[in-house]
Length: 299
Image 1 (cartoon, rainbow, N blue to C red):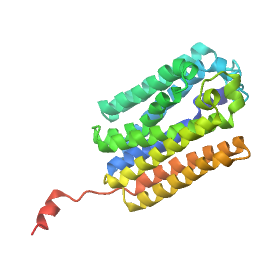
Image 2 (image 1 turned 90 degrees about the horizontal axis):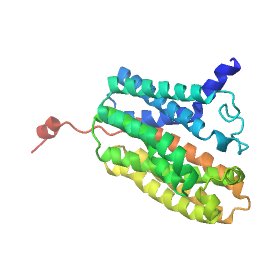
Image 3 (image 1 turned 90 degrees about the vertical axis):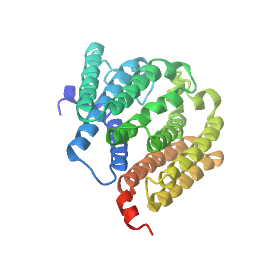
Image 4 (image 1 turned 180 degrees about the vertical axis):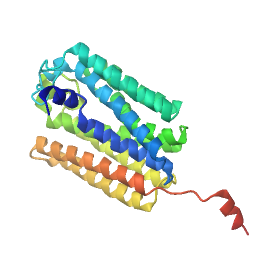
């Protein structure tokens, strides 16, 4: 792959786009309950992916100065000056407009509004201001991370119901220990860039307490998938196992000899957790009994 093309591919953060693609598909399949329309699915996932890619490029534009101060990110295309800022902004704008247009044509207004809100929160509110000025910037940014699965769900249902609330809760709560684990693992980078994330401003011990609380809330939210009638008991069992395992790993950080190693393991497990849960939501949905069947069996 020519170097220039490679830079334009990497600037959209393919790993993040793929992760959001998985969660968006989970929301779509959960709402579809086995009645999947191929064209609608493809359009929804492509549209969401384009908007996520747009947000990642905008984020790279906003973070180019910060990225130069961090070992992990100093070689990114915008930080290294490999892509001119004006071209990157145009690139991000085209990706975002294309994705929103596709969603507008193939889904519904609610899905479009959710994705657009996620883009504004991530590329604007979080990247341009909160990331630099607030210790709780990640908390607001987590709403953007929940937008893809929420949009995938609402693309099918066309309404913001209990299932949408559960998905919003699950994916927002998951973001917090995931982000704090990265900050602990990359503590020196975040300190060098003066990013006021919780582990940097209040210490790892404070971050661990918040992680435990968020993981408890996340686990409770995942159980609501089954208790709310959206998934079967297989998901309940898997979600319980994942939540308790993640909680144990977070709690073990209080006795960890190597905080950075512990945080890296916690980060990796967080990815595994949300991936497995997304798969379970996609395959272990519940199908309501039609009202006419209920009537036929009435005494």
